Image 1 (cartoon, rainbow, N blue to C red):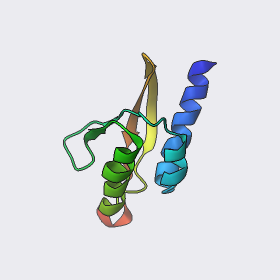
Image 2 (cartoon, rainbow, N blue to C red):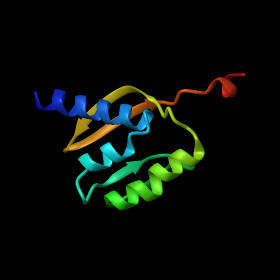
Image 3 (tube, one colour):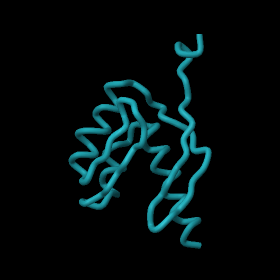
Length: 96
């Protein structure tokens, strides 16, 4: 039951990112959130509070214009952590 609830929340939050509902998402985050986006690219980094998440990641996400960010292709829970495997959607311009 717990895992299903956490997965539903994680999917809802990724939809919020894709819909640029950053304020609503930040309002649901704990003040001391630990957010890590893994990868050697412009979005790959780690944040340790809500202000850093808003300033360093959501702002960068908007500037880069990579929204919609992704579709969830896998979601796992491990030691109170959510691990999501994402598939980035390419824009029509990128597909041409």
